[in-house]
Image (cartoon, rainbow, N blue to C red; front, side, top):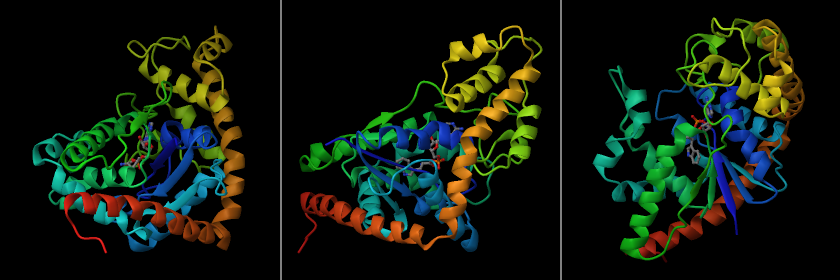
Length: 327
Ligand code: TYM
């Protein structure tokens, strides 16, 4: 069976980067693959979180999965912390991961840089991420470009474990789209669009109102040239906006270029905002319904039950293979 697994951390409000890079792929592949989509709350707590906000955001991410089109009747949606096997296999993965290879993870370097205090969990995070994936024998993992290195590590750990202890884990493939794998900040095309950027105009949130979305796109940086032309080397800011248009408007890059030929950036950015709003408005309506409902909690509870059943099989197999007793 083909199985996909992926997740979005509840550590901040979801921006369109996470949708374009990851969430839209969950929807694209859910009919063809068996889907496991989880909320990695144990990953979120590797940096300080306010308990009330964490609780709210975890439900919020789950509601956004469904609002954006993940079908809870088809796919399993659950919270990581409700399936204890993640923490258990995470520990086992830490015993297989080398300190040296973990030290090379660029995400850890980025997130720890300039901080006085960093949790040890932030460092061991990629071992838990490997466990998330391997527990479900996922064949494919749809992510944005920034998770590539973690996926590579996951593949290395799975292969190492299999070689040492016998075939236990499926070695997963990352699935990264060519367009939209790395959405950049609207204020600076050299840094990834991220909710941790203090400049709120640098990102568009899935739950931003139309007025806010219009304002943010109107402020987006461009360049001193005039042409809506796709060229990452010469025109990174405009190329970033063209990719966003292409994904939200469901048209090719060439079509975007053609459509705005001879027009200035003003017209382009205006229409870009409308294309994004048109896609997000139905998500937001569905979201408002779900977030109030007990239906959402029912889905998450049932998801955790199904996920636990799957995860336990792999955890037991891994334990047995290593010589840990399973009764
Ligand atoms: P996270 O929560 O930072 O991001 C969630 C997903 O969104 C993608 N993404 C982006 N893609 C394109 N452009 C952007 N600006 C952008 N920002 C975010 C990310 O690549 C990711 O796919 N470690 C993971 C969460 C995780 C996970 C897993 C993912 C934990 N366990 C197992 C897959 C499988 C993370 O921090 O993603």
